Image (cartoon, rainbow, N blue to C red; front, side, top):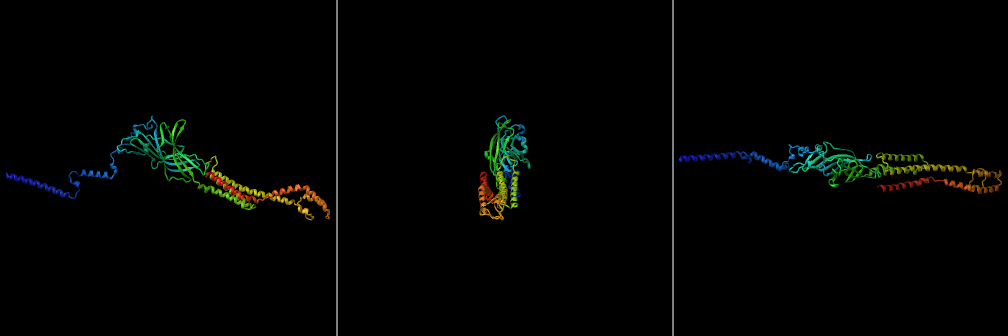
Length: 479
C-alpha cells in the first residue's frame, strides 16, 4: 500500500517537472521575437489583420466599400445596359421636351478678319441632361467617366454652330471628348472645339469702330417640342480666360442670350448666343495712316514759301505729295473688304488728298496769272507813244496817248515849230472826244494788275486753318 502511494507521488512529480522544463525551454527560444509569433498556430492570421489595418489607415482608397462599377469583371456596356435600349431615340421620346443645359468656357479668341468678316474661337462646350436609360446601381453614388469611344453608342444632343464656316473637334493626342455619367442617369458631355464663324461687321466708322459678333448654338434636328436648350447658369454659364488678348481689338464684354429661330419647313428651334463686343485699337492706324497723311498735307504747304518763278522746285513737290497720298489710300483699301459705303478713314484720306491737290492747283493759278500780267504789261509798254525828236508841250508830257493820236497831231506840226496854238486846240478837242476811251483803257489796265504774291500769302493762312478746322470736326464726330 505504501509502495503504491509512493509510486503515484513520484509519477506526479515527474509529470510536473517535465511540464515546467518544457515551458522554460519555449520561453528561452522565443525571447526577442514579436508577440504575434508566440501564439502557436495564429501568427499568419494575425499578420494579415495587421497589414489590412495598416493599409486602411495609410491610403484613402481602401476606405471605399466595394462597388461593382470598379469591378474589372464588369463591362461598362453591361453596367449601363446599352444593349437593352434604343439610343437612336431621345430620352423620354413622346413626352415633354428634354431640357439640355449648356455652359461654355472660352479658351482663346484666335483671330478677327476684316477681309473675310469672320472670327475664330476655341472653346470648351459642355452639355448637361438626364437619361434614365444610363442609370446604374451604386452604393457610394460615384460617377463613371468615359472618353469619346462610348459617345458613339449612346444618345447625345446634335448641336451645331449657326453661320459657321469651319469647325473641328481637337484630336491630339486623342479626341478631346469627355462623358461623365451619374448613377441616377445625369450626363455631362464635354468637348473642345475650334470654330470659325461669320461676323457681320460695320466699317462705316473704321478704324474708330466697335464690332459686335456672336457665336450661335442650335440643335439641328430637334425642335423646341423635343429639345429645350438653355444656359445652365444664366450669364454665369459663360467663362473666359483672363489672358485672352488680340492685337487690334480690346475685348469689352462677353454675355449670353437665348432666342427662338424659325424655319418655314421645320419649325421653331431654341438658339443660344455667345455675344462679345470688340473695340479697335487706334494707335496702330495713327502711326500708319493718319500721321503720314497729315505730314503729306503739311509738306504740300511748303510750296507757298517757295518763289513763284522756281517752277522746277514747286511742281515736283506738289506731284510727289499727290502720289504719296495715292499710295497711302491704296494701301489702306488693300487690307479692307470692298464695301459699298464710305468709311471714316476714307473721309480723312480723301479730304487730305484734296488739300494736297489744291496746293498744286494753287501754284498753277499763280503761274498762269503771273504770265497774263506780264503779257498785258508788255502790250501796254508797246502802245506808249514815241516822242523822240519832237518838242512836247506840258499837256503831252502829263498825258498818255495812243499811236493814232500822235499820228493825227503830225499834220499840225510844221517843220520850223510854228502853229503851237492850233496844236493845243486840237489836243483839247481830242482829249474831250477820247476821254471816255482813255478812262476805259486805264481801268482795264488797273484791273489786270494782280499781285500774284498775295495768293501765296493768303494760302499760307487759309490752307492750314481749313485743315485744322476739318480735323476738329472729324475727331469730334468719330472719336
